Picture 1 (cartoon, one colour):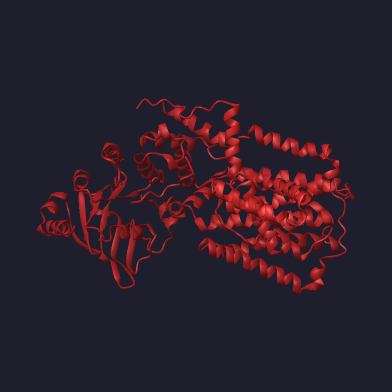
Picture 2 (picture 1 turned 90 degrees about the horizontal axis):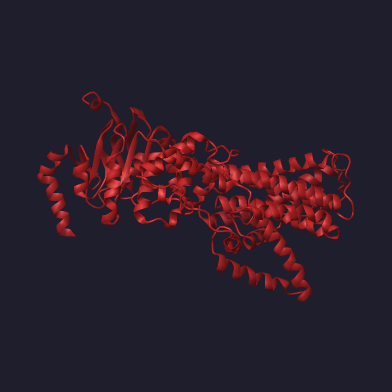
Amino acid sequence: MADASATPVLETRDLDKRFGGIVAASAISIAIRKGARHALIGPNGAGKTTFVNLLTGMLRPSGGEILLDGAPITNLEPHRRVRLGIARTFQINQLFADLTPIETLGLAVSERHGSGRDWWRIVGSRAGITAEVGELLERFQLVDVMTERTAILPYGKQRLLEIAVAFACKPRVLLLDEPAAGVPEAERQEILATIAALPADVTVLLIEHDMDIVFSFADRISVLVNGELFVEGPPDEVARDPRVKAVYLGEALDG
Amino acid sequence: MSSKIDTAVSRFLASRARFGPFEIAFWLIAFASIYLLPGRHLILTETAIWGLFALSLDLILGYAGIISLGHAAFFGVGAYAAGLLAKHEIIAEPSIALLCAGLAAAALGFATSFLVLRGSDLTRLMVTLGVALVCFELANKFAELTGGADGLQGVTIAPVFGAYRFDMFGHTAYVYTLVWLFVLFIVARRIVNSPFGLSLKAIKGNALRSSAIGIAVNWRLVAVYTLSAGYAGIAGGLLAQTQAFASLSMLSIERSADALLILIIGGTGYLYGGLIGALIYRLLQDYLSDLTARYWQFWIGLLLVAIVLVGRERIGGWVYLVEKQVARALRRPPPTSPADQGV
């Protein structure tokens, strides 16, 4: 563990993002070590999702660098970063409404195997791919709804599929953007259990509002405020930090 | 346990690609019409060509969500290419010349595909419309080559494989067209059921997520746009060959709009929409012009509005609803969750 902590798998250096006059990310330098359960927290509008968009290439930074295993990926297109091993989920479901979970996961797995450009073979005719889809359906408790259109799935199942699709890309770094957002309490546990059961070799960056989830999951926490990295450290340290308390207390008073 | 799910997964995916009874019946009837309706071959040829043209539009609209009002550009380029190849006796064999016509249209499709990658539906409508207008005016301008407003005259099509001469009753033309339509349909059907085809549906559904699972969205769109242009070019080439003539109307906005209309009548996103739409369009045209010779477009227009309001954007439109009802009446529903969950 001590050795692994020395090599960050994903790292940003002085990452900036400005939208006109608005600063959404300002000189963010974060190093996420291999196998970490890293949480990114902060009040609304702190720039958490912007940061994920920068990491995944959905937004281009105004300045700074992003490194994966020490190699710069700052200007790579989103789909290339996925192939290098960064996958994400979205705060608001981004699913394929007309496809079933089988097709959705089959597609993600096919793409990873590089058969997405295969225009002659029928989908699912490769045994390796169907086996993997089967495993994913089981791992994310989607077997009972696997032949339903995604649009009509219960919200909790859609959230599970949201994570499953990202996981199907076999990421080395998985970015979870508020995975349990909007999920009713009854289905929440299923999602949290699934996240807790993610393989240890997958590095996870979790963006979350819910402090219970963050403190039960993370081994390291970064606090983002107004686009700047405010505090970073192990959970107990962050929890004790008076500045963090002030930020959250301030937000509570505003709200 | 997991091998059971595995089997269910592959069975489900395979079932999506399997030929259903409706499809088999459709093609049996289509080929039977060669013998059963010998007096209608001229009209059937034209209908099949419209069907193929609308199918080419379905590949981009129904599968990749690219709306176009200028697909006649590719149809016309294919038509002129086939006409010129025959007129100047560059390639005598019609089937080879037709492939070349398709390639010419595909090349134009590839070159212009980069214009439709970005932007909203409105941008795409305008860009495709603009490309078609440019092609139309170019064909008009270079009259020495294309015949301009008079059309490409003096085209003689050689016999297919040196053996089957195009006759005045259109028998050869119909068999020739139908075989092309069938082969291209089967190829298109393979493609839309492949991982590539699935990725197109994904892009249509959610381009953002598609890139987030590693799909190079732009290249997939370029590929399908090129393919679709090639299909449209072959449709145009077929019309030029079976009529031994190419004209500016093959590049016109009306032709683009008619293809869209036919496709919407038949429904998008299941490949048969263009073919069924072309049949319905032709039947309606015949029936309505018998009824009200001058106002048949009034009824077509009314029908179009009704179909779009009823079918919305559902795959297959109203045809899907009808098929679902028929299928429900014919057989009991298949089991939806084949694997018992033990977890």
